[in-house]
Structure formats: C-alpha cells, structure tokens
Length: 134
Image 1 (tube, helix red, strand yellow):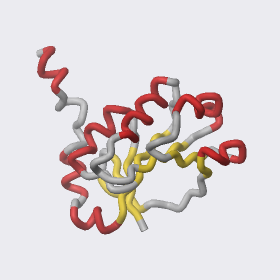
Image 2 (cartoon, helix red, strand yellow; image 1 turned 135 degrees about the vertical axis):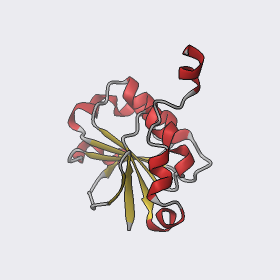
Image 3 (cartoon, one colour; image 1 turned 135 degrees about the horizontal axis):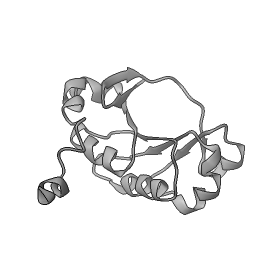
C-alpha cells in the first residue's frame, strides 16, 4: 500500500494501471517512467497522458527530478507524481521541478507523518532566489 502526498497532506493511493515506456503505444493516459528514461522520447505522446509517475530508486538518487523538469519544459501539463522513497525534506524540490504529488510507501508515511510534509508545502516562499530578490 502507499500514500499520496500533496500540499494539503496525505490521501490514500488508488490503484491506477500504468504502462512502462516500452509499452507507451498502449497507454490509457497513465505512464510509469524510471529515473533513467529519456523524457525527449516521451515528448510525442505527452498530449494523450494525464498522469506520469516517475520512480525514485532511493532518496539519494535525484535523477527523477531532472526527468520531471524536462517533461515540464516540453510542455507537459498533466499530473506528475514522484513514487518511491522520497523524503519530506525533498518535497519542496519535488514541487519546484514540477511534481504535483508524491506517492510514498506506508512505512515511510508512518516515520514521516503528514505534518512534516505540510510544513514544507509552502515551497514557493522558501527558496534562495526569493531571498536574493528581496
């Protein structure tokens, strides 16, 4: 089981069938990418997708942040969801690069409750660029 994290806290995850990049031709609007998939190869299919989930293999591997940012730069406007062992401290970065939500395992949600994630939900107000402009 897993939990969906948004700026307002936790919500239960509902099972959605997605396809991998190898099976993109048969997608039903949901695509599951890995941190090593090339976002440029997905670009021709972006209009037909409403949810892209990008997996993090470990909290210490940030390549999925780059995949998300590039998809947004290509014009993807649907939901981007990070999946895997993303930690609360990374939530602000996830939101800044374009993720709308994070899906975490239940055991991680038990160790890092919703209040730790909501504390970081004001991600736009707490970045170094805003402090430099002030």
